[in-house]
Image 1: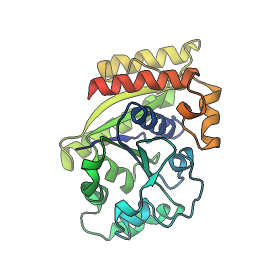
Image 2: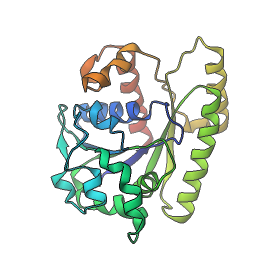
Image 3: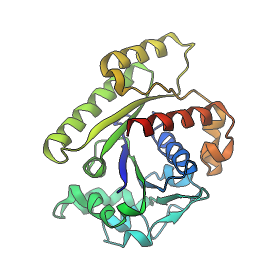
Length: 253
């Protein structure tokens, strides 16, 4: 049975997609069977894994709205053991089309059921908003990883995210919990970054991953080549950090 983890933060620009794709790749390189579900109409996780076509016929939209067989929509990636359910631009309209369906908040959970035994991990990349698609991810997930950057407004976004998770836990998915908070684009030389990190650790204690992901040029370049960092430059600081983060995630699970 797969462990389903949503990468979510209602604030944009926190490195959520980068975290999802690179954690997935690092898990696969350690011998796990991993599926990345792109639940963001921008399709950044999809392109980061090498698929740049925004007009894909078989996608998360096809599965959630059209009822397509999920097995027919999953694509193999360049990394052995890593597959993806890609997003297409049609996903932008899924919110409206799902609204009239019964049990609309459980559409993703239902779609994943037939394939859960085929994977060790299913990682869901959510859009940076509280939407019906994000609720679908939280209902399907066992845990949530919340990426953030060490800036003042990140704390506000984190508070909103925690409140959302509490509401979903109370009403829709009693099993969901926060697996951890990961600080992205961290620069220890910046005083504000150190202060925000300390505040987050004070508030969330052992739920904050010890590993921080540094600002790294190679990490920023990799998506434009359609590659996770482990395939683009596995010796850079970003790749080393994600490998350490995955070790922590495995220990937590």
